[in-house]
Image (cartoon, rainbow, N blue to C red; front, side, top):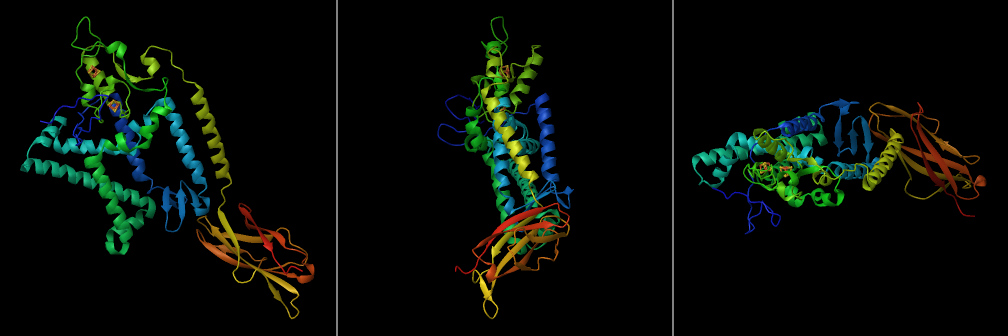
Length: 461
Ligand code: SF4
Ligand code: SF4
């Protein structure tokens, strides 16, 4: 049988001394945190699967239409020109994570990270097909009999199916559900790009579910690396109450509350012993809390030998919630929220680009070349899901400027773009020097407008 894991602070439990991989088979656990995490995980999976199905403003709640360069998120439509908003979103997510980590430690890792949520499901599938942790360890060591092939092969196949479903749901965020169904029922050759993408993603997920697993958290995830810089002695983490638990040993008059049953180690998905103190590998899943609480319950002792607490709390020192780093992160977060709100409030339902038409910068018209002509191309994109009527105005026309087509109303169909040629003519006698012209493109209902400045050029005399 595989050697029992003996976690230490000098080595990673999942790597043997010779560098080979040691598989962790965490034991099953039940308790209030496990139940709550199962519920949160199920809700998150539901949201992940449902978002491409729920229609808002005529589009799925999240539809990243990369092919048409339109991104529909919770009823708002963004185009590539709105990508600058991504800066606020990314920094906002980053600061929120800093803030939450400073207050609540690795709550994200243990409760909401997709890797954790997926691996919880993976372990359920594995437990269901291969048996409990002891049975799985036995299976690891046994030769390839019919039983092992059936069980291990069956569980790997089930993980492959799970990866296949997750990859298809992911693809539906980019192609929408009806299009995904069409792709799945058509010949793969007709959508070979999507087919290769889903195949590669299914394989990558399957590799993660079947082999890589907790290694992702321990050696790959950058957030796990920086957490020690984000937390302090007042941060809420999972911790072992050494003052209460030590000296550990069989229940006796001189021992602490820890009976050294190692239940907390057996359930740990990253294979560590939390009694050594907070470690980089701890993802804050609280499995050890439930395991130890059930032991304490049997011993008729108070729960919470392992619990959510700060380092100061475990040392019986007062815990401060408001501290300089929390104030600093709060200020950063508030600035980010205000900036994003302002940016979203300025979001327009049309986007406009205006460029000089190619060929010459200007033309001289008429028999005596007494009229200067400039030509521009205005491209108006309607981001609404209904036809939009637009008008074009020149806000500061010089005397005698004639703009062909400016009196017209342009109807732009829903979610499409139209190009309008703007031909401007100015009598040469009225042209003294290059004129910066402000052009406003607005919707007839007055709800959206954008301004662009172009220079009317002419001969330098
Ligand atoms: S589960 Fe509790 S009692 Fe058992 S070894 Fe861990 S800390 Fe000690
Ligand atoms: S030490 Fe406890 S909270 Fe941390 S990963 Fe292991 S079981 Fe989860």
